Every structure is written in C-alpha cells, then in structure tokens.
Image (cartoon, rainbow, N blue to C red; front, side, top):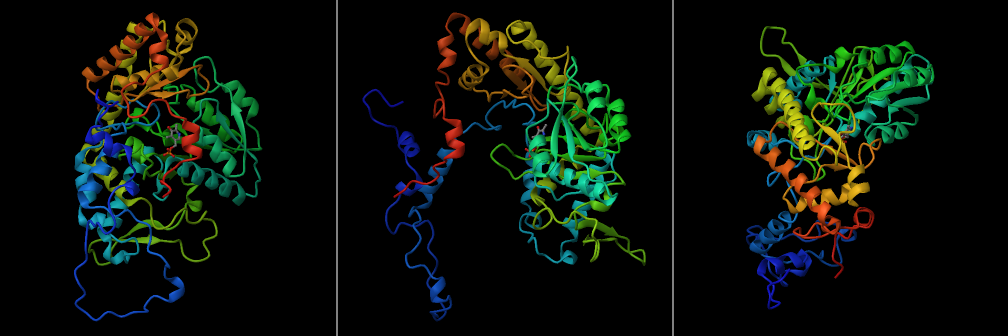
Length: 506
Ligand SMILES: *Cc1c(COP(=O)(O)O)cnc(C)c1O
C-alpha cells in the first residue's frame, strides 16, 4: 500500500530494505576510545587474519533501532493479540519472570563457573527438579533436554538402554494416529520401527488394536494424555497394563500437561518416562524458535540410565547448609545414556519456570489447569452455538484444554478451506489456530485458548469465526484471497523453509 500520489511513507521505506542496504561507509553506532597503551602488531598469526574486513552493515544506532523495531512489528506475537495455536500453549508470559531471569546473577552466570561459586543456581535447579518430580509423580528428573522433542529422544534412548541392560533387543515403538509429528520422528531417529495404533470411536486409543500389536518386540508406547484431540483417555489404566504386561515402557508426551496439573499425575497413570515442555506449560516466550526446555522425569527402574551430570544436594556433615553439585556418576558409569548437550540445559528457562511454580504454588497450578479447561469449553460452547453445523467438533461433546473442529462442511458447502478461514482470521487481528493437525481429522482446526485469556477475547474470537463463515456464505472469494491487512499476503511456506534468503547479496 502506498499513499494515493505514489509516495511512500517513511515506515514503508524502512520496511522495504535490508540492513545491508542501509547506512553509509564509515558510519558507526559505537566507536572505541583511542588506545592508551602502546599498540602491538602481530598478536594474531598472519594465517588467521582476514585479508578483507568483514562486510558488515555500517549504520548508526537510530538506524539499527528502527530497522529491528520495524521488523518486529511485521510479525504477529502474543503481546499484541490472541494466539490460540493448539498444542502450543501460547499463554501470557508474566513479566515477573523476565525480571528475575534478567538479574545479573542469573543472566551473567558463566556456564563454566565452578559449582562452588554457582550454589544459588544449582539450588534453583535442584529445587526445580524436585518440583517437576512432584508434578509428574515420578521421582527422578533430568533438566538437560532442550525441547519437548529432545526430551522424547532422551526418553526413547532411555528405553533402549533399559531393555539393552536386560539383554533384550526390542525393535518397535507404538504411537496412536493422533500423535504429534515429533513422536514418529523421534522413534525413527532412535533407530526403532514405528507402529501406529488406531483410535477408537471416542478418539482414544483403540484398546483391541493395542492388544493385538503389543508383543515382546515392542519397546515402548508413546502417548499424549489428554491427546492432541483434547480428550483424556479413560482407558489409561488398561492401556498401562497391556503395555507393562509385555515388558514395554510407557512414555508420556507432556505437551498437554496444562490440562491436568495438580489433578492427575502421569506417574500415577502408570507412565515410566515423561517430558515437560517448560516453554508451553510453565511460560517462556516461544514460537520464534526458542530457546525452550524439555526436562524429563522417570521412574526408579529407568533412573540408572539418566543423562549425567545430575544436579545433586549434599547434606553437610556438621549441620551446616547443604551444598549443591554436579554429579557425573563417577568414572565407569556405563549405564547412563551420557550427555545430551553441552552444559546443563537452558538455564534462563529454568529460572522462569521456577518463578512460575513458586509464585503460583500447588493450588495456583491447579487453578491454571481448571481455568484452561474452562476457557476451552466456554469457547467450544460459543462456537457450537454460532457455527456448530459448519465447523463441528471432531470427537465427543466436551474437551480438556483444547479441541478440534473439522472444516470439512465449509469446504464442501461453502468452498472455503480451513486454510482460508485461518488466513482470514489474521485480518481480524487473531493468530490462527493450528490447522491440518491432528492428521486424523479432515480439515482440522485445533484451538487452545489457554487460561490467560478473558471472556471478552474468547467472545470476540467466536464472533470473528462466525463472521468469516457468514461472509463466505455470501462470497467465498473474500476468504480465499485473505489476508488483506498483513505485511505479506500468502507465502510460499515450503519455499520459505527450504530456500530461505536471509541475506541480500551485494
Ligand atoms: C509441542 C509438542 C511436542 C514437541 O515439543 P517441542 O518442545 O516443540 O520440541 C511434542 N508433542 C506435542 C503433543 C506437542 O504439542
């Protein structure tokens, strides 16, 4: 868009250029003071010196600030609007967490700091391990994995170590049709064969199919409960019995923990290994690529194989303060699957999670789950009332913290796809829900409002969807060509991911 006489506004000019096209030779944001000691040449060996100075943008500070602030405004973010991206738990990130994470003792802590001089940080990590163990109902925690998917990989490697230690070579891992894409990817990466388990008519695990497929060649069942369909599996005890009956482990994908915290614990359901997505359930700005954290909690029988080092607490012998340390299990600890990453994990995420758990307390975490489920059911009820025949609920009558609608009727009857509806929502100022996942629902729309949204926001979102459907009854072209108000229209998403152009060639 430009003004009617063809002139660009200064903001549009800003937006059009990369930082390499800005500035002028010799322009600087910062200049070091003149040397006040003698200059020494030749400290860096000739072979390691550049022939040419690096081609960096030469820009002043105001230009840098405008460039990046304008770029930041081109994206949608949780601080500017509702972000009901199912499965991702895009809840508000309390500002308290940012304050504590920015304290110099946290933010400037060096990862190679001697543990004796990082006692506060180690104590925080130890306490966090204890809290997560309590929430999961499983006693042993490793904070190392960097994301949920990394926790999954850790969990499946732990499963392999467990079976291997018993002299068993199992080859298969089971996962239901509704599972998140990272589950099958993990199974393959860990060298197992994926076997899909069918769903029953209520959207839960088909227990008969599970029984038919569970045998001594199965290492593990990976399950999300509540599932990505927003359904808590009522047969979980039976499922656990079947899986344990053939000597396999039960893995809990904890991405949906937001629905059950304080009400139900994976350990009590019979799971052996759990991952947490700290960036989802326990807040941490995410969606732009991280960092996240995916700690795992495990049962006694899996503990010997946990990654090392572990954060441990040592009681003082003379009644003084306990100390905290990193325990690598001693040399020759052959049972551990070893390190999963450099250093101890994404510490800033631990600080935010710790702040969240401590500021809410056990009852507060329970409230989180209660309100997230209430909000999802409220929004579901509003949508069923307004567009229930056009966007029916895929399974069941009610939901946990998220729910899946099917856009099959709007595709058939109005000629607009779920994708068109999602794109049109951007013009209403909302981030679209997750689309085309879970794969088992035709034209799926997976909606997760979270507990931090107001009733007014939920109402406005339901109104926007109803308006888009009504508009499509009149003219489906409008949604098909949406969005109209965003910096870019429809993108070649595969091209953007596979052939990114991150730098302007000069
Ligand atoms: C987000 C998610 C994952 C993967 O977690 P990451 O932290 O993104 O790696 C796995 N399973 C489910 C159900 C999820 O929603």
